[in-house]
Length: 166
Length: 165
Image 1: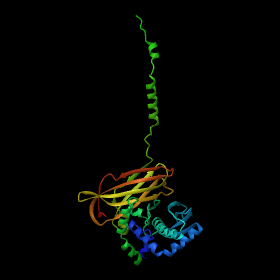
Image 2 (image 1 turned 45 degrees about the vertical axis):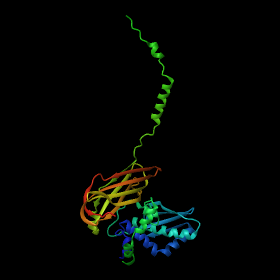
Image 3 (image 1 turned 180 degrees about the vertical axis):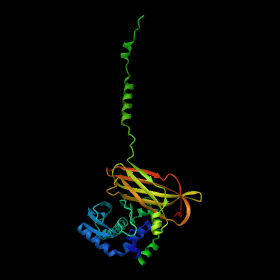
Image 4 (image 1 turned 120 degrees about the vertical axis):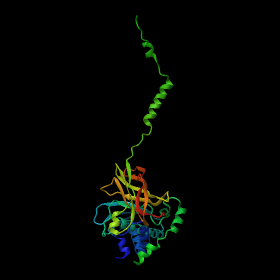
């Protein structure tokens, strides 16, 4: 089993740095897939994506996209978990959606991982309120200048190399 | 000898108008002042502890901080900011922060948001004193927002040293 596959199971993601690295990796390997997904969403207004042991449904309404998630084979749906605002520019919207999809994939994987050797303790649906692609994440919603500095200092090389090679 | 009570004077006693108004205004203020609202939620910050589960099953040395917010009414979600503090060289410092952790409770336990994944790698197995604290912003289904904070009350020693980041 590769390290990436392990990250999709309950034996995988433990720390924020692992989730952040997985976000960057997903963005890297799923570029075409996310662009396709974004186009579909902009055309149809609704799409569903299954990853690990969860399913995310994205809704587009009034240039705003939000998503709901549920564990596969479960009736319990967590509604309006995150949202992102788009504008009239399609290319800009697609670029924004790529990041949004990668972030939501990480949320779904960490909440509904594939059952591994050691089960995850179930306790609702959790994620960081600020997505990895915003400066607010690095600045904790406060000083964005500090956020830029913190972002530049954040090194995920080691984890990314592990994801790419192992 | 007959005793005469000054009844007439008693009945004639008048409260001056200004005083009557002041009493009325005072009564009104007392009744209308915002009453101290009873908290709808509470926060439970457990003492930081090394995870025996992860140690036994995955051979990982990890320090965990468990936090639970519980309300008497259903929650929409909780946003938590927490940190683990340690005493290093006789100085109390924050060794790990967990910021803006949002949790949506499940349907079964919609009064409770349980945080069970606030964990950090131990850098060595040196005994160190730890303390946990957290601030929560609880968004209730009825639209109200409760803000509260709590801590693990006292320092405990754990065989785990985390280098401050």
